[in-house]
Image 1: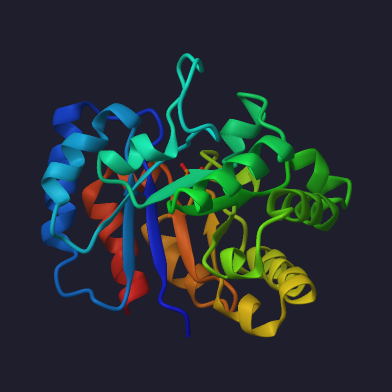
Image 2: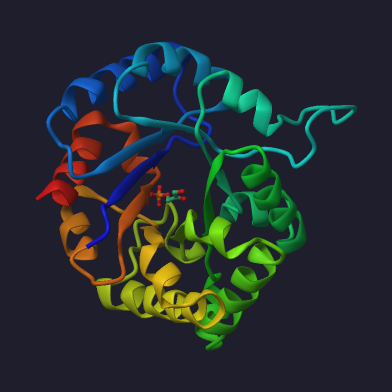
Amino acid sequence: MLKPFIAGNWKMNLTLKESKELAASLRTGVEGMNGVDVGVFPPFVFIEGVHSVLKGSSIILGAQNMYWEDKGAFTGEISGDMIKEVGCTHVILGHSERRHVFGETDSMINSKLSAAFAGDVMPIFCLGEKLDERESGDTFKVIERQLVAGLDGLTTEQVSRLTIAYEPVWAIGTGKTATPAQAQEVHARIRALLEDSYGKDVSARIRIQYGGSAKPDNAAELLSQPDINGLLVGGASLKKDDFLKIVSAAFE
Ligand code: 13P
């Protein structure tokens, strides 16, 4: 079994003080839970503060986005080297809010994934269908397009180190969780596509997280599915008790 990976995507929430307090509580709360990888993804400007709190702990620290260029005249953007300098080892790329609120395309996300690997930052690569795409029976088609385009040009070795997050857009922040069976069906499809392109060994090694209204009361059931290897948690990651209950569900 793959080691579960529970990640908290804090999105554009909290204050600096709240971020550091949450990080400190998580640091204490996850002590002894060795069989689970736990990560937090604060807003850019809070990363350094959160890093100062988490330094030396096992909690993974990452950013919610990065740009594909190293430096230059790209007002408002942040590079992989910059997030690394303030303590990040990981980065979320291709999140549905980046795709659908900010217009990121598969090809932009592909450039970001390549840059992350080149800069030695580990990506969580997000994909997922919108409600109309699910209702018109296009879920698998959309997932395949996002996966193939996103991973274009990456080496098998790079792909083997990826984490993928399946986040159906209709389940994000809506309280409408995909049923464990609905999520498992797509996760299995993603793994089968990975196996076709990169082989069984690689596909078996890639952790596929589910994201979309993951909560303490549905975490265990989602995590019991054979191809769900972790959760990417939004809203519930902002409350220490909820997030720690989710981590415990993975630990158990
Ligand atoms: P919610 O858990 O708030 O639905 O958000 C999921 C998500 O988008 C995590 O990246």
